[in-house]
Length: 70
Image: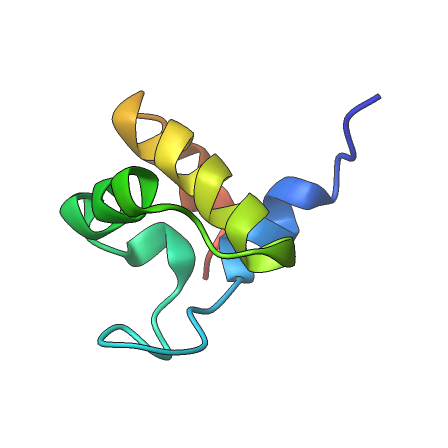
């Protein structure tokens, strides 16, 4: 069963390193997330979150985060 709090966690997750360090994952530019999908996502929670952000962005579902981010 999906975790209902996961979307909220994903909405507030921050990129910890690189050019976009400090930026919310949901606010990362789509080409950057696509690059990760082609090169390989990092291991662990960050990689799983980036995979989900990739799916959300390529399917145009970013609007799901609007009510969660203030």
